[in-house]
Amino acid sequence: GLKRQVITVHIGQAGVQMGNAVWNLYGMEHGIGRDGCLTTPAGPVNDACPAEHSTFYKETVAGKYIPRTVMVDLEPTVVDQIRSGPDRSLYHPDQLISGKEDAANNFARGYHTEGRSYLQQVLEGIRLFAESSEGVQGFIVFHSMGGGTGSGLTSLVSESLRQDYAKKSNLEVLVYPAPKVSTAVVEPYNALLVSHKTLDTTDCAFMVDNEAIYDISAGKLDVERPMYPNLNRIISQVVSSITASLRFPGTLNVDINEFQTNLVPFPRVHFPLLAYAPFASAQRSAHQRPPIVDLTAACFEPGNQLFKLDESEHAASKYIACCMLYRGDVVAKDINHAIRHIRDTKGLEFVEWCPTGFKVGINCRPPVAAVSPDDELVGGGRAVCMMSNTTAIAGAWTRLCHKFDLMFRKRAFIHWYESEGMEKDDFILARENIEVLRHDYRELVPTPATIKTESLVSDKTSPGFRGLAERSGRTNFLQGDFEPSAIAEI
Ligand code: GDP
Image (tube, rainbow, N blue to C red; front, side):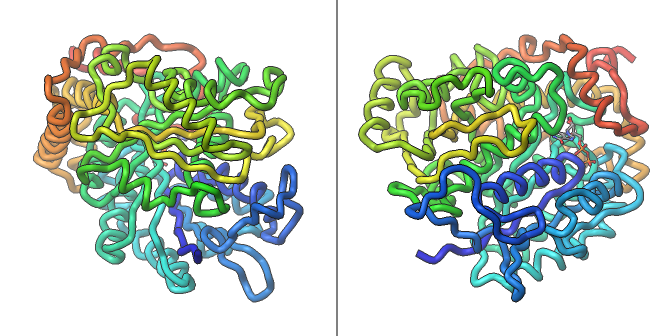
């Protein structure tokens, strides 16, 4: 049937850089060149699986395709790179928005001061795409939780979207601050503040843990020193799988609204864990067609998941729902067999009130072989992306709250936020709301999960991660290698 349109918003450095990677990959998959003109699609041309450009691209009278997206950063560097890079003519100048001064890793600057002055421009950009759509089905907002723009301006945008487009679904792809990758010590503050602000304005949020994808890049894809582009390419492949059903036909296609319906039993419990298989480097992808049973099983391995959770978090957890999105050369019979096998051997535990568990989709389009000559992630003929709503994800909040508390107990760095119009009560309110969220997750499991905070804050720093932040070239006044535990002792 006719697909309705999706508008994508990229906010802050991480948001825009992920956007760059995602639109690059979409372009390859759709056969839309970096100038917006049609080219030959990558991979085997498959007439039986035609691309539906209109969900994500707007066609101009001249026959060019423009990504339905707005990118915004409060500082110019990252957006300028797009303006002067190979994708400069893919976008209309109005959909690339940048300011002069960044949010200094401060939620308050993104929400109350700097960011607020760009809100209208962002909303205007979104409105233009909405007006030229036959019908908007929803939004996907990309951002970091730890950055000032990614947290603050995203909160504003999310509130406005809920207000202006109340019935449309609001999805998010967000970068969770990894202890080893974080560029600023205050990221736990920003992350908790944005989580609080968007908890009621977002329908489904996919958290990606930089530490997890760093390890995938280094460990499975043999990248010696992973940098943001390497991490973003992994994210883009997974996002492509999530949105494939909106862009290509399939025998058992699961629409984005449908998987939301299946995954989110209560509005606040909306943070599915992502996993993907195969992660195969050029060297290692000797056999291009891994058996479905292997791909399926891989999704349950922590090493294939985009979020790092403790053993103890996994052990005490239960699944609420599980959505498996296969793409490429896959048949239902093999999937049924694979899932039965997983059920029998892995002993997956589902919550009592949700016995069915698995939702399966098959999309005809395989992942593209490689986006660029230096691409380390090689798509084979088939892949699977798992989205599981598991109570284990509550560990993400446990960890954040712990770090937040260590700083907030001393009121560390609070004056930076107060000088931009925030009050201590804003922090207390956010912290309480997330405590309730943790409680929401615990409530889903009959026997309260015992989550040990001590074991979750291992902060062993690897030089690789520090280097990552340095190499990104960002310097902000709050940047540093402070350990949260050190701050608690100030
Ligand atoms: P903002 O521009 O003020 O929103 O700040 P950032 O987006 O740079 O936020 C900092 C957080 O985002 C840190 O946790 C970084 O590790 C992470 N980050 C920054 N850029 C990227 C990127 O391109 N990819 C990924 N995966 N993470 C990023």
